Image 1 (cartoon, helix red, strand yellow):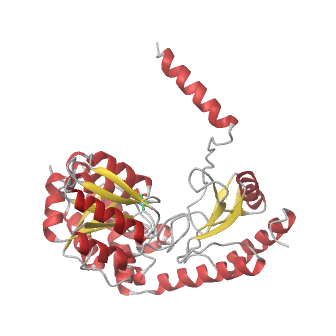
Image 2 (cartoon, rainbow, N blue to C red):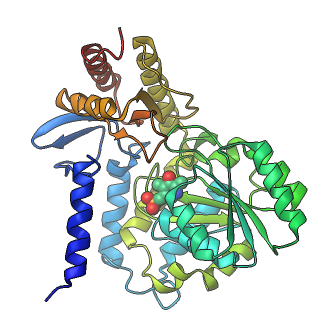
Image 3 (cartoon, rainbow, N blue to C red):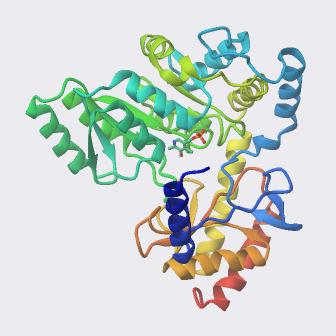
Length: 397
Ligand SMILES: *Cc1c(COP(=O)(O)O)cnc(C)c1O
């Protein structure tokens, strides 16, 4: 017999979410997650995937994955430290280090796992972490897991960061102090102020940690936000994901050799969770090779992003202050935002609404993720739908 208490808990809370309109219904895709997707038998222009460069469906990656399956099978068979390290895992890590211009790198099963792994391998209850208030959920969880004191600073507010860094240092209460930030913030598309963060870190001897999930493959000719600012030798931890621009799945930490050696003996997901599959590894290696050889996909991404942004702005939409391809279309009211998104869907554009509590109340938005794989024709189709629905709902004139 199952627990009555659990039954009651689930019933009440699921009902509550449904009443408040917060219960997320997931629409499964009947196609690959490319620039056009098929849902419920309908084709939509896809503006919601993190597949920035179109690599998730790239023939070169598919071929590499299939060859790896033929050679190594579908699973790695063990955790990295028993005998789940294949030669291709090491090859991937070398390629990642070269790509990030660091001494070494370590691969994990996901970007989320990186943050579970890396923060608590270095920080403990005698330490403090200065964390941007808009940091990703996995950073927040990773910080909690470490049991360090978490000190939130206002989003990208360097005066607040400096004040709190000084307070933490002067208090004498902490052994190590870390500052941790997203490289690119995923809801607004703004870039962390890394030059100022590095300056403050140098002044107060802070460990620097940048999670560049949305910057890698996008900024710095693809190498990421740290390279974009020319700070490759100044950031202790560079986190990246293989799941967004790289188009596969997995994550990595790039940094100094000693740091990576330490993570290989002390980070728990590396020690206790089976390593990336051969197909994931081979496809990721191919992706890094493609990005290292040519900036063509990166350039196409930016062209498409600029085209979509200019089009939305010309129609009169508020697209916020994004500095990256992430293009919010800010509607404001939560109910209006959700209605806008579902009308776009009915007219053939898949762009998800994002509302409180993911973003502040009254700043509901539909978030658009253009990619290198979109054609101008697809973007024009999306813009025409935006115009139609925007006018119909009185959001634009
Ligand atoms: C998406 C994201 C992650 C999670 O990466 P996965 O590889 O999907 O697990 C971690 N951090 C940030 C900042 C992200 O945007």
